[in-house]
Length: 316
Image (cartoon, rainbow, N blue to C red; front, side, top):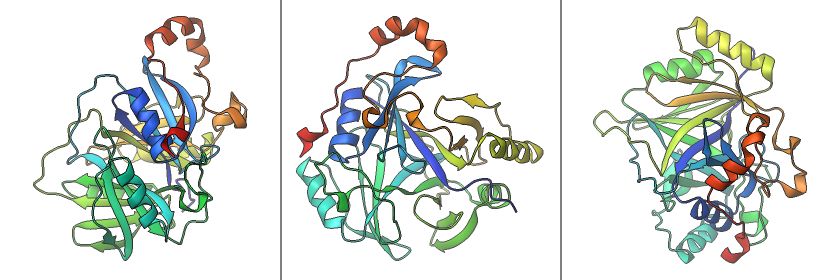
């Protein structure tokens, strides 16, 4: 089978206070703010993109920060934990760093033979840092975090579902994933089984359903190379009974959306064209960038957005 889906492109969460959101992901975690734009479906709300130096697919964690949003609830039918990849010897650094900023951290956990820690951001968003020596990506730092300890991008994501069979069928039969391993009620899948493409299904037959709001994931996007491969994926999904949207232009990639059988919103996003199409690479994320259709309303839109600043070095 031709490989059309090659891993995770981005993961998008709902957040609360925009400034607190920027401070945590750039200051505490050290990700680069690569794009500051708007939610194309709700133009009075920011859309922040955090990632590595250029916001490469597989590193991009994005947020819709709604000021005053109540806290959501992680549960069944949602992506509950986003896992970032760190170096094998970086766990102690991160344990000490997170404690320094008052973040409650789990004990060291072991999953499929690999160690990790788990915590939540200020909104309750579930995050894991997975220590491994299988990730050659360089990571990114503003300077407050040693490069060797920086976040390299995604390791994977956990889908909390009532059952795995129909979602497994989707991943394996139509999205180029294959089964890698299982551990208790956790089932692991990957395209190549490397950091950046791993998806776990955690089967939870009795837990409560999630409630989407601040601190929960809105959707997970999977990578495809370009517009042509995206249309091929769209056709495969349509032929197999999935309700897929038309192609939507998100400026920095194009997208199609559908819900997997367990209720999680999936997106297929193109690797092209990337985040440097409207800003110099050295100045990514500095200005509020708007799609062409929104430019005539820039003054109104900017007045509706809460002013934010970027100062990650205050979290040295």
